[in-house]
Length: 190
Picture 1 (cartoon, rainbow, N blue to C red):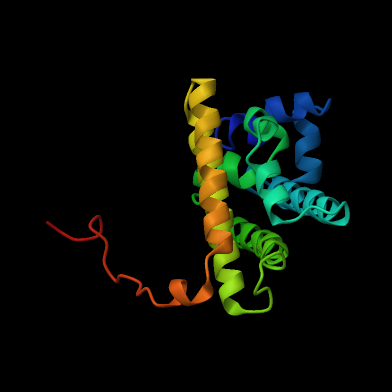
Picture 2 (picture 1 turned 45 degrees about the vertical axis):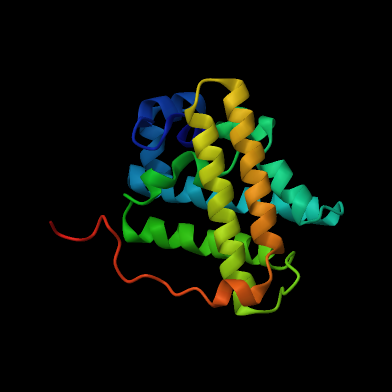
């Protein structure tokens, strides 16, 4: 929870252990390094996120309900209890391969559940589109959290919901005709 609230880099072992009601010495009885703790905490929070999605689906949520729940004011205001991707994505990218692979596995499982909610659920396209949908949801939430004006943050969330719903309902044929560029403006040497 403190990694999602404070960030992986900012959360120190003493603070983490103090929050857990343990001493620093107890840390090394359970983990060899902070990296291992980050990996375990990330895996646990991804599993928790998946369990919540599974509960929502058992309760009858459709894709729009899932999107609206993710891009909600409650999720916006509680990063410590929410999606680890939206709270930690830039820091996850800087972690060792073992942590990034654990993240990728958890993400793949979550995205597969989203893909099952799409009209063409059993296709490769559904998996690609579900990945893009999740990326848009995460980016929207990060963007909304970055602005201090609550009205502006709410407008960002609503715009994200609209964009995700358009993507979710777009016909497959229009998506597959677009070529992927091989170079970006940022990667070109000047």
